[in-house]
Structure formats: C-alpha cells, structure tokens
Amino acid sequence: MSRRGGLLRSGAVFGAMTLLSRVAGFVRDMVQAQLFGAGGLVDAFAIAYRIPNYLRRIFAEGSFASAFVPVLSELRQKGDEAALKDFLDHVAGALCATVLVVSGLGMLAAPAVVALIAPGSLDDPGKFGLTAELLRIVFPYLALVSMTALAGAVLNSFERFALPALTPVLHNLAVIAAMLALSPWLEVPIKALAWGVLAAGALQLLLLWPALGRLGLRPRLRLQLQHPGVRKVRRLMLPTLFSSSVAQLNLIVGTMFASLLVDGSQSWLYYSDRLIEFPLGVFGVALGTVILPHLARRHADTDADGYAEALDWGLRTVLLLALPAALGLWLLAEPLAITIFERGEFLAADSRMTALAMMAMAVGIPGFMASKVLLSAFYARQDTRTPMRAAVATVFINVALTAAITTPLWLSNVPGAHAGIALATGLAGLANAGLLWRALRRGGLTLAPGWGRHLLRLLLACAVMTAVVWLADRAVGDWRAWSGLARWGWLLAVVAAGAAGYGLALLAMGWRPRELRGP
Image 1 (cartoon, rainbow, N blue to C red):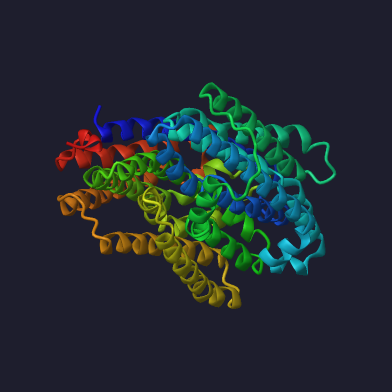
Image 2 (image 1 turned 90 degrees about the vertical axis):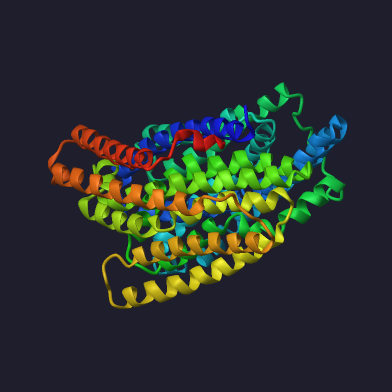
C-alpha cells in the first residue's frame, strides 16, 4: 500500500473510533441538557471543566504529544530498544510528577483560579463557590488523562490507533452513568458531572496502560529531571505551550468575557462548542494524529519529497472535509440544537442562543482543522518556535476581536452578545492557520500542482450542497412541530441529502475517491 494509502487507512480507523466517541458524546450532551438545561449551574460546570481541559492540551495530547512523538520516532528509527525504553521510563516519571504537583496546586488555589478565569462570577458568591468546588473535584482528572495521553502517544507512534481513539467513549459513558446514577442523590445534582469526569479519567488510564505492556513498553516511572530525553522533550515542549493549545486558550479568553454576560452565556458557548468539536474530532484530530508520526519519520529519513507529499495530501483532505462541515453546521445550527438538546430543562430560547454561537464559530472550522495538519508539519521536524510565534499572535488577535465585537453588543444589551465571542474565536482560528501556512511557504515548502482546480471543485460542490440543504430544510418546516424521533429522522435525512449533493457534485466535476490516496 502506498504511503498516502496507509495514512488514509490509519485516518479512517482513527476517525471511525472517534465518530463512535462523538456519538456517545452527543448522548451525554442530550442527557446533560435534559437534566440541567442552560443557566448558572451549567455555567459553573463549564468554567470548572474548561480549566483542566485547557491544561490537558499542554500536558496531554497537545503540547506534550507534539514534543514527545518526534523524539520517540527518532529513537525508534535508530532501532535502539534499550534507549527507547529508558527514554519512556524517565519521561513517564517526569510527566507523572509534574501533573500531580499541578493538580494539587490547582485544587488548593481553586478560588483564585476561578477569580482569574471568570471574574464576572465574583458578583455571585453562590455561583463562585460552586465553581471552585467543582474545580477541586475535576482537577485530578488532569493527572489521569495526561498519563493516558502518554500511553496513547506511544501506541499511535507504533500505528496502534484504534484503542487510543476509543478511550473517549469511556469518558462519555462514565459521565452519562454518573449523571443518571448520582444526580438524584446529590444535594447539588450538577456535581454528578464533575464526579463523572474524574471517574472517566481513571477508566481511560486503566484501558490504555496495560496495552503498553503488550508492546513490551510499559514504563517504569523514574524521576530524573536532567535525563537527556526529558530535557529534550522539555526544550521542545516549552515553545508549544501556546501553539498546541491556541484554540483552548482562545476559549479561556472567551470564558473570561462570557463571565461578564448574562447567565447562560457560558452554557450556550459550551453546547455550541460541543457540536463544533464533532468535525474537529472526527476529521481534524484524526488527520493531525496519524500524519505526525509519518511526517516525523520522513524528516528523520531526510525524505523531503515524501514529507511534502504527505503534507499536500493532508491539506487537500482537510479542505475536502472542513468546508462542507462548516457549511452544514452553519445551515443547520438551530435544527441541530433543537434535535439534540431541546428537551427537559433546555428551552427553545436556549436552542436559539446555542445556534447563534454555533453559526458564528463554524466560520473557523477550516482554520481549526488545517492548523492540526500544519502544526504537525513543524513538530515533525522539531521546530516548535515558529508555531509558538503564530500562537502568540493569534491570541492577541482573538483578544482584540473579542473586545471589538462583543463589547458594543454587551454595552447595548443586545441579546446573543455571546455569539461575538464565538465569532472572534472562529476568526482567530483562520488567522492561526494563515500564519502557519505563511511560515511554511517562507521556509521553501512547495505543494503539488492542481490546487486551483481542487478549490474550484470544492466551492462549486458547496454551492450545490447549500441549495440541497436549504430546499430540504424548507420541506421539513417547523422542526418543533415534529416528535423527537421524527426530528432525528428528518435531521439525518437532510444531512444525508446535503452530503449526497456535495459528493455527487464533486464526482460530476471529475473528482475521484482515489485522489484521497494520491496518484
């Protein structure tokens, strides 16, 4: 099988497992929306959960993985098994010690962290106290998921993609079980979500850690911070603290602004982000995950042509998937919110506010997904400084856009001011991808010919998809007039019609599925 054929197969496996995870995630969100709706309680959980989730991008699959995988691939290419195992032992020990200390400090300083991240919550002592309490419960999740990510990174490097991609299913199932089993018995039912997150971290680690033993690579934790491998990972990792987590950092910026808005703003952004994360997880993260080890090996082998070829494939595939995903979420924002969330405590007004945020943030999906591949291009050659500079610039862009767009809406008491935060986040995602791409071009990277034709096909196919979805949506009429099961049937039918229109338009213009695997 060709190199790009292997990447396609790996991406398909990872994407399929992630799709299963996202389906479980939708069930989790439906249960959460029905039980808790949107408002102050869910706002408190969204803030508390976002903080360790941001740190996870640093110590888990984001910054850590981008520094760890290239070094691991380099050692693997050299064939020195003893050096590889020694490297794993010391990196695992250093990571474990670090995340335990950070988790402990986070639990102790929970009120100060909440005050920093969500200053608006200080005006409501009850909400502030609950957020700090929830944060103390979920903070140890950081240590568990970070060690899980170490195991997942090793398995991915050995092209064992399925099991790491399956672990989020456990996360969602654990949270669902906790909500259903614990919430009726707790004085503050929303705490069931926090306990579910903690249990999820433990289950994920218990699934992946034994899998390392089957490869003969289960680490023995050794703490020697000056070990050469640990120092190399730390040196590569430090500049990526911003670049690998720029999207999450922008969400933190949004959290700070949203804390100043009306109750429910955090919840609406949280639910919209959950839907935006669907294409990012199924396609964007899958492509970035499978292409990083491949690019790292091509760079280690000084195979410049193979490196450029894989990157070209990744970017073409990203746009092929990202443009219809963004367009579909924009066109079907309110039907999605109505179908998935609107029941129980989640009201029609919550659906409208969630849809506004979703439409605004969908603008950035192509940028978010392209950045996953572009970052891999830099990390594969152990260049972490260039993405860091792009990330710092992106955060400044996001802050400026958020202030410029949201502040006038907030001061004018315009309903839906939170959508300004989502729009700024989406535009910042596009800016980040643009900065990364410009840096690669300046570095001499050249892509294969045919990009003009590829983009024209995609744009025309998106136009066909828009027409099909618009006509199908009009045929459905009032989504709220249908029962819950009928809504799901109509939603799946409209999505299938849009996808069919997009795919048939591409085929009519000469695109063929074999292009996914290259010539």
